[in-house]
Image (cartoon, rainbow, N blue to C red; front, side, top):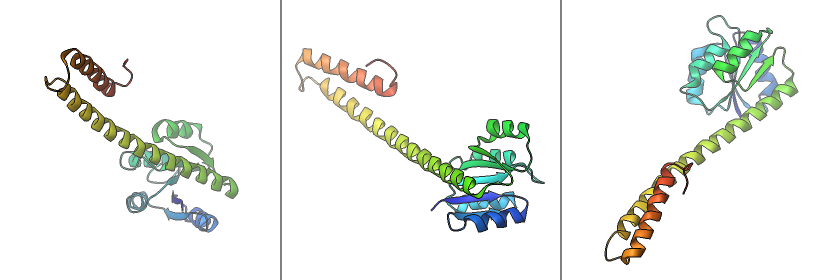
Length: 183
């Protein structure tokens, strides 16, 4: 199930959100930014929704604050004020996925949260694949280096063949180190 964290200084907004979406998502709500950070640390949050205008911190500032330690959840900014500067700031600094106006439409917000959660899952899969690719590439590079070293041995290949294999393996290793180079 999708885990959604909603930070808003207005308790009635949190109550309405929880009532609207408690059957669809694991809903985590708070009026306190530090509590929101704690929830991010304790739960597998997929989507973070924050109100923009709050007394102690703006939504953009909150997103900036959590970015380094919690880059994976998709961020959505919710506000009752049409503030184009806040939108630009949010996009540039907070890397938000969507900007949503209050009052929100329940069906539309549900759809947006589901899309955001799918994006979060895709990012997570991509990150895991990139990590596996890097590990496998390093293992392949090391294996090719061992084969190259073995090919340089007098006892493995005749002299002419040895040079050809050594050059090919050397090119393969260089290509692994820089995949954009020519093989």
